[in-house]
View 1: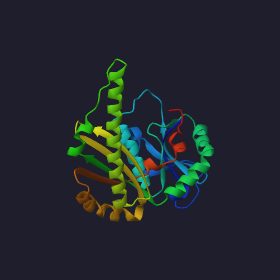
View 2: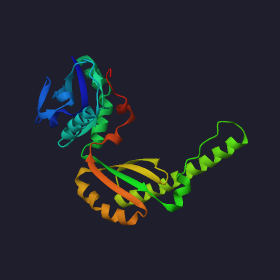
View 3: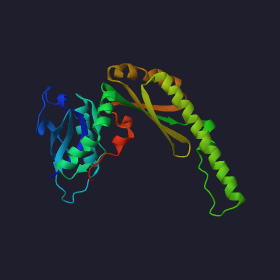
Length: 248
């Protein structure tokens, strides 16, 4: 029997401090395709998973939501290390080996993320001074002087957008003072820029963090600001965990 994996958490948080030796049912949760959700014990950890049959069924948007819902429910009461959507272990041995081979990394990550939450900030910047920088520069198909001129112009505009994004992310960091952050930036439409920021904070400070929204909205001129969370720490897993997967 194959196993569909949602996340990993500490064993004791799911079983009232006791150590189960066999998979145990998590009441009141349905997983991908409506499957029952189990805690699969492995030492001090438990992999949250569902039995899975490879019958040719394709994952869809509903599956993504079902996966996220299971991770979010577990996150309410425990530290979780989310698995990549679509992670399937073909056998129990494959699942156990994944935990064994990453046990030290799992332990360090759980200790780092215990009591922490992820918050999201989306800034849409519509600054008149950036209008020219938002216009994409198509590169000609031919090589030569014209190509080099356009390439330099394109690089200059990219740097201008990145400089603006860095300045805003520094301002946001000072306003919200997170423990850690990840920032990405992309152009939207022809006159805007989306800065997507993930902040790692202490779970006890969520309300305090949310209360800073009003101040931030007033100080960040020419920006549309949207805040969401708390979420499981999807953006703050060590790189090694992001590659952990079964035969998916």
